[in-house]
Length: 220
Image (cartoon, rainbow, N blue to C red; front, side, top):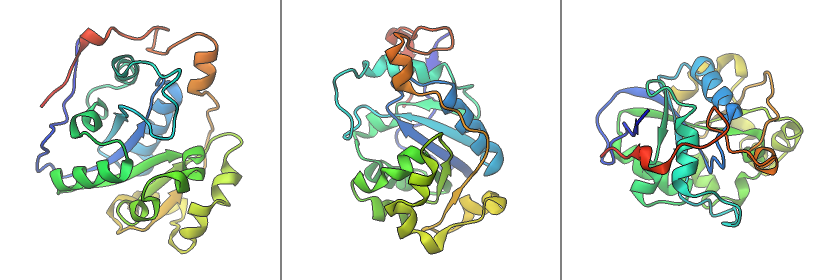
């Protein structure tokens, strides 16, 4: 099956509520899919974009699979309709979430974006470039991860946003609220990790192997 990116580089005027799930996807795995599907329902989103990073500034290049292979693994989890795998970050030429989000908000002016992250990512958020400015730019939904939840809920980001937390029962309001605002969505936890998959010698594409990079075509 040939995959084609449906997110235009220069944006459009769509009116939508979209969750952004960014990462290395080294490889993408069913845990990412679980987060994305849960966000669609809990937040009342129209789509979730699986944004594959060309290069994570916080992660070593050693052991990082080629971009095409990581993108293929994300594409294998997407349905092309509500779950969209995209190389938009590579096309924008950005490496930091703050910069990526700034360009997306300009190019998709009518979209209400929500940043999706696991508890592990939220716990390490203070290491990110412009993390406080990021929190003032987009609502954030945090998903539970085994062994990481207390670390996230007691961390610097949670403390910084202590008075901006939305109760989980009101999570569907999140995309329409002005940041800073965030919600922690408790629920079933998936302990699968990209690291454990690589350590077992696998690379998930739904069948155990990544699709060939030449099967990927970017849309403009």
